[in-house]
Length: 474
Image 1 (cartoon, helix red, strand yellow):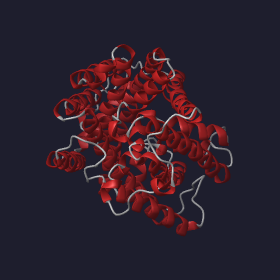
Image 2 (cartoon, rainbow, N blue to C red):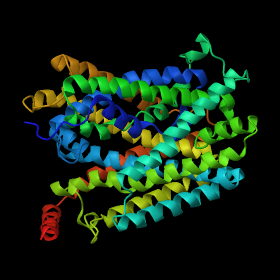
Image 3 (cartoon, rainbow, N blue to C red):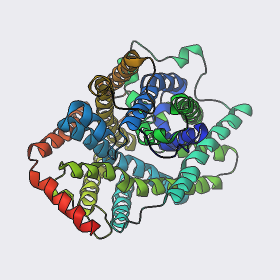
Image 4 (cartoon, one colour):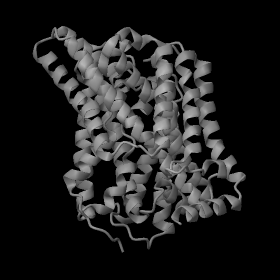
């Protein structure tokens, strides 16, 4: 039986989902599609966001143990794939850090000198310095508390997101010209050009992460009724912010001129210049920077907790199990920072900042999508393998409902995965060969590593962890 007080109502869970997903750093990708961004966001929501929400809620309430997707996939598909799933969830975050920090660096540049936003050395250096500082801070267990993270998210993400939508609405209300045409023809993409869909992985990334908040599903009052309602409410809010945010950028910045990590701040700078309020750009850039840095500091150690949970099952090498006196997994933190440092050089070695940003974001998306495919498959398998495990929330219509939802998720995610290997025509500066080597090679490399770790797995790993935990308890 499920224990604990069910204290979360419909609205609270909806807001948790909104806070977890809404990120203005990601809306520039959708903005590249212009008015068609609405089409892509709606389709992505139906084929990706909704299946994730429903399936992760069922899995989280059936297997609420620490480890999340690691436990879910492990129970369904075995130890190797369980470790692969949690590895993918961790490593995609590691690859995502440079993109998030590039957004913070560019926002910071707009406070003092917007020309630095085009300086690749400045961006690369900022990524490396800030992430190592964040890593060192986390050595001392000084993670930002929940309420500070909430404030950072509010002032650095939600309010700027609302502001850019309001500015765009005012822009159109005053009769200013729009860079996009609102019509039935421009709403739909060119279905004869597969390259038109190449950016859809980025759209899916803006709708990813709901499995993290699904752990709260077991705390919802009357989850069978209220959880789907909360998902509907949060879906409407998230889709609205992402859709109108993307349109706000596309209205004032021509598609070819949208720099992926700078789209939002570029659009606001354009609005403020037009309204003769250029100094407000620096103010907004300051809040966006603080918000981005606050989230990075929290996320530096957040995903590592899921990865470190594998040590309890003997899946983590001894060298990566080390905890300091503040209970921080120092070697995992250092490994993470080294990977981020190496990836930061992509910004220096590729022709444009947008191409660097997209290559990293797309690799992130591919690894995340592979994890989601494992999760969708596991949900279907567990309906047959563990039918008697009680779930506070279950997808309705028995196994048929699970097959429908899971299959939609698998098909939608697989399509995005495949077309993501096509270099997008909307972004300049790609060398096709280098692009494919980086993306395909990166996907293969990061998928092989967890199997190599499992191959060399030894009983001593589990024994070492147990002794270490017993020592800490004493």
